[in-house]
Image (cartoon, rainbow, N blue to C red; front, side, top):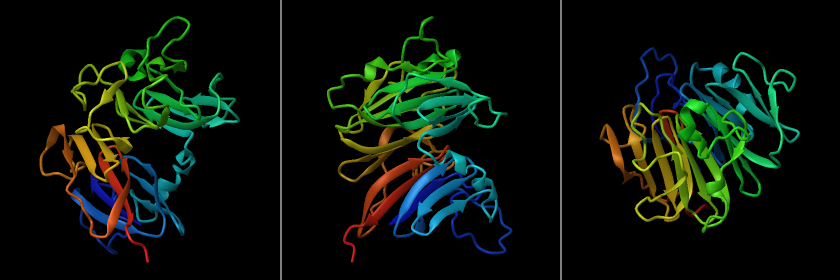
Length: 299
């Protein structure tokens, strides 16, 4: 398998084999480059300063320093049911979601516990809140009421913004239940079992990644393609279609789209067709992007 990366690289978070004794400032990567190869590659965590990848020989770190010390401090977030947002951190322990203030450690005694969500398989964070997905495809959101569009639901006295509430618009969808969620910045996306993509969110003072973005989950048309995988960064998004193509949209100030343009408001196909490799996954950091491939004809 192989990992390709593009985007913000000021902390060398896209370099898994940095040059020894290099004193030069690292450059952003403006076009997708192969940065790691192994029998197993799973991007476990990616943010502005750090990337953690699971390989056949264990975790590989990139960013902040050559020893990956900064990355190791974030290993507690590698669980699919642990996440951190600008307004706190949350995790699922023993079937109960617990949210803690940023300055506190994640212990049940110090945090606020939320019940009523069962069998959570994924927990993600955006700038001002959280999204949880259960095994039966139900989606809950909670966060700051000032940015209510990111909740994707109505807030009431009985279902306030700061407590988990069910996103009812994602119930009984024509292409099946939600199987994956992703969030970053002020954007949330959800993918169904039938390969349909939904998105919601937005910031009142920022141009949204998608022109159709609002406070209600809406279907996303990516050149009429079915979507196999998806991810979202601070101000960009990338998807993998069932045909094996990667499309991207949004800001490109650090080269995170792998394109020449500074930004794009339309979906653009990424010009990456590695010989003998099939694209199997995508992942976005805040201002970076990752594409995972495997050998199409393994020996």
